[in-house]
Image (cartoon, rainbow, N blue to C red):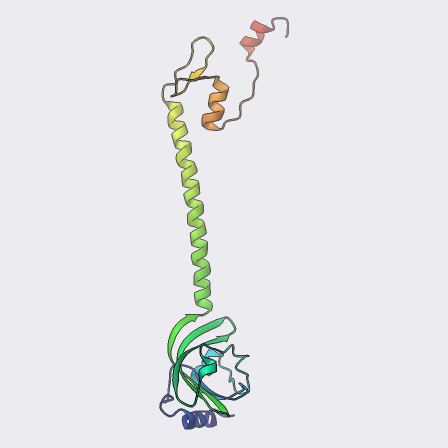
Length: 201
């Protein structure tokens, strides 16, 4: 069906809503849902391809109040889908025993590829922000540990245990493990080797 015949037929059905250059999709379908004619806006929505001969199901048509359409124009909402595009429109619609007429008059919500990409980027930003917050918290904790270690530590002159803020004494190794997470291994320095094991070369 040519664009001229398509628009002429639409104009016959919907003269009040299909002025030249109507910005939103409009179409006429048979009672079984096969699209008979449509305007240029629907063609653009479908990627530049005509939708005549398509079923309303193939176009992803969902009428919020489809079952209540009658011969009188009624305002309702319709969802159109094509590929990754999804748009919710406010529409004027009516139907009789042979035809269904739908004219979109306002865009309520659009979910296109660009919006999907924006949503994905926003989710990635949220995840990166959460990860950065976690790393900052770990860095602040490390700074606090370094600050605590730089302060004067009360150490026993005899056994070298360290006293915490609560007054409890801890072995040096235990204190370091608890406050810095450092793993401690034990050995003997050369001086202690000679002191405790004089016979070992």
